Image 1 (tube, one colour):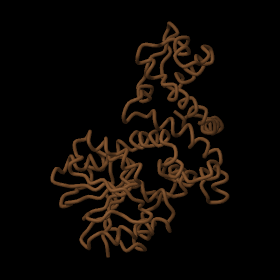
Image 2 (tube, one colour):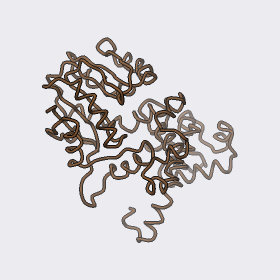
Image 3 (cartoon, rainbow, N blue to C red):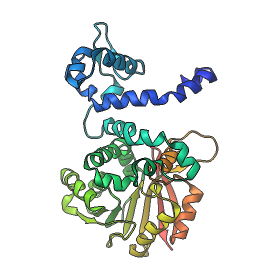
Image 4 (cartoon, helix red, strand yellow):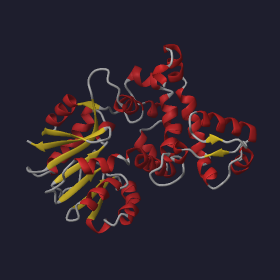
Length: 335
């Protein structure tokens, strides 16, 4: 539909994209989808639930309905649509990503010029500290971040487990394993495998409940630590999902260097990342790359850039296994 617009209107639509993103953010923050699902449909009633003014809230809902998030009905009430259902507050929904994108990410992207001009994260410029330090000091925002990662990257998990053959791995170390959802999915498919979840102390603590709920806690050793300083020992394969893209090449060399010291000669390094394609082909990874510049200061990489990165850390890129999502599994072996 967008491509059918005249170039001027198409560019205008792109330039005002943040109008939509901020409307989604407010809807997510006020749990409007939850209220509508519970039967609260009129703007006046929604306003009473949220503390908003009825007429401005109606205008918000009407605008969202124009982009298929909610649907205005003949009686003036609003109903859920498939897009609105994704904002219902539940595990794996898109509510947490909407909150994260509409808050710190929105503020940071407002300073994109600073990042492009200086090469430094706008997040640090605004909040006075790196994003992961900030999350370590803000437990509520950290919970949103964890849930957002599940919402955004959740579909990658079954796609990755289906695409890559983990056969032969006895102990899998998930470096920077976050809330444990990825490691849990692999262990469920491979019941003889054991796992080690390695992440910051406060992150490992949050992951314990997920591992228990997924029924794999008895096969996982949770080990707190900072992968910039060390890594867990005892694995014959080391997995990193969306870790390398958070960091510069020099920082990645340090992180990978710790893995290189710990991994056996016959071990496997598995990096789950977007691989940037050459040319003008569209790809979510190309804008995700800008997000890495603005928020943590990292970058997405091409196949050639990954190959060089691994070589400098003592690994050889063996193969790239695509999945049905944007990510691929990059398998590297120690040399």
